[in-house]
Amino acid sequence: MKIRNPRTGLYDYELIEDTSKTIKQKGQDSRMAQKQWSGLGVKKRVAVLRNWMKTLKEFQNEIIDQLSIDTARKKIAAIEMDGIIGLLQGWCYRAPQLLSSPEQRKSATVSTVMVQQQWIPYEVVGVISPWNFPLLLALIDVVPALLAGSSVLLKPSEVTPRFMDGLEKSIQAVPELASVLKLVRGGADAGKSVVENVDAICFTGSVPTGKKIGAVCAERFIPAFLELGGKDPAIVLEDADIDIATDAVLRSAAGATGQACQSLERIYVAETIFDEFVKKITQKAAVVTLTINPEKGQMGPLIFDKQAKKIDDQIDDAIAKGAEVLTGGKVENINGGLWCRPTVLINVTHDMKVMTEETFGPVIPIMSFTTEQEAITLVNDSIYGLSASVFSKDIDNAVNISSQIEAGAISINDGSLTNKVFDAEKNSFKESGINASRMGDAGFLRFFRKKALLIQTEPPATMMGFEENQE
Ligand code: NAD
Image (cartoon, rainbow, N blue to C red; front, side, top):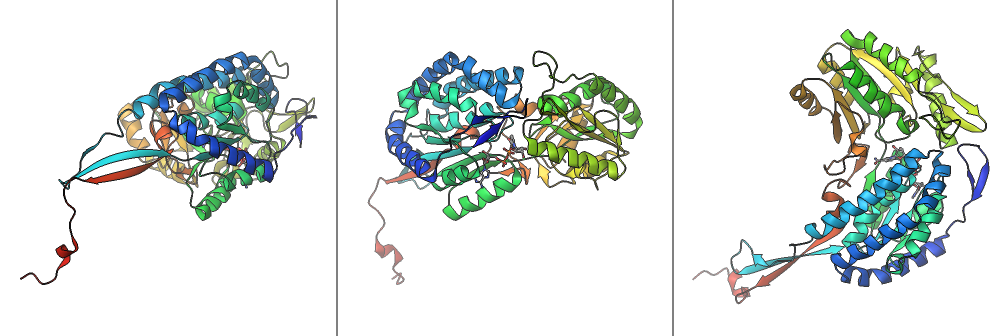
C-alpha cells in the first residue's frame, strides 16, 4: 500500500500489509502468551511496562520524526509522545491500586454463603485506531488492557503508519511485551480480520465504521468499546468573558487543524455579544500562521486528502445556502499539501452540512441565539453527543445548562478539556459511541469480566425443601 505524505502530496512510503493469515497467527500467538502474562500478576506487568517506558524513550526521537511525517506536525508529535509516557506512568500507578482488594472472601446476604470475586481479563483485546493522533489514540487503550492482563492486537490507521516502525522497535526491545502486544499493518481488511480474532474491541474512528464493527461484534458476542465522531457545540452566554471564549474556541476549533474528535465545530453566541465575539475571533483567526515552513507557524496541512474534499464540500454547501465567509474559506494546494486556514462562517443554519455533519477541519460556523433554551435546543439538534463547551462567568448557571446538553463531557470556560484531563469518566451520547468509558477507573476495569465464587459453609438445601405436602 502506497502512503501519501501530507506535506508534499507524494506517495513516498510503502506499507507492507498483514494478511488475514498473518493476523490469525498473531492472534493465536498472543492468545498463547496471554495465560503466562495474566499469571504474572499486576506488579510484574507494571515492571514490564516500566521497561517499555525506557525503550520508548530510547526510540522517541525516531518515533517523533516518523510521526512528524505522518501528521506534518512536530510540536504535536512531541506532545503525543509525552502523553504516552504520562499515560504509562498514570496507569502503572493506578492499576495495582484498583486490583488490590477484589479477591477477598466475604459473607453474602445469605448468611451461610461466602462470596469471592475473581476478575478475569479478556484474553485478546483488539485495538483499532484512527489517523488524527496516531500514537496517542493507538496506545490509549493498549496500556490499560495490557496491565489488566490481556494480550493486544493493535491496528493503527493505514493513513499514518510510519510511526509504527519506531514503535515496533521499542516493543521488540522488551521480549515479555513483544509476545503480548502485536502490531497489525493495513486498512479496513486488516481491521476486519482483527475483529475476527479477538475477544473484545476498542475502536476509535468514524461513526459509519463504528457501526459496522459494532454489528460484527454483536454477531460474535464480544464487547465493542466504540469512541466515535462528534460535532461538538459551544454555547457562549451573554455574561461570558469574550477574550477567554474567543481564545478557547479558536484553539479548540483550529488546533491540530481541527482534526480532533472533540474540536468545537459549531458555536452559538448570545445575540447581545454576537458582533463583538465575531469581530474578535475573526481578528484572532486571521493571524494564525500555516506551517508551510515546518519550523514556524501554528497550523499544519490536512492529513487525509479524502477529508480535505469533505471540508471543501461543506464550505461550498454553506456558501451556496447563504453563509458568509469572514476568514479562510477554501482548501488550498500549496506545494502538494492541502491546507485550510481557520474559516469563520456566519449566516449559518442547521440546513447546512457544516452545522450537522462532522467537519474534522478548522471551520468555525457561528450562529446567534436569543434565549438559553433556544441555545440548548440548537445544541441538542444533532445525531452526535461526544462533548461540548459552555462559556459563562456564572458557573452555577453553566453547570445547569451543561446538565441539559446531550453529550458525554462538557468543558466550562474552555474547549476540548477531555484531551488533557483523563480522570473523569465520560460516556458518549447518541451516535458518538457506546459502552464503558476509556477515561477514569472504567478505562481499566472494562477489561475484566467478574466471576463470582459462591462458597456454601453449611450443608446445602436438599430436594425435600420443595416438598409440596407441608404436613
Ligand atoms: P475510520 O473509521 O475511517 O478508520 C478508523 C480505523 O478503522 C482505521 O484504522 C481503519 O483502517 C479501520 N477500519 C476501517 N474500516 C474498517 C472495518 N470495516 N473493520 C475494521 N476496521 C476498519 O476513521 P478515521 O477517518 O481514521 O478517523 C477519524 C474519525 O475518528 C472521526 O470521525 C473522529 O471523530 C473519530 N475519532 C474519535 C475519537 C474519540 O475518542 N471519540 C478520537 C479520535 C477520532
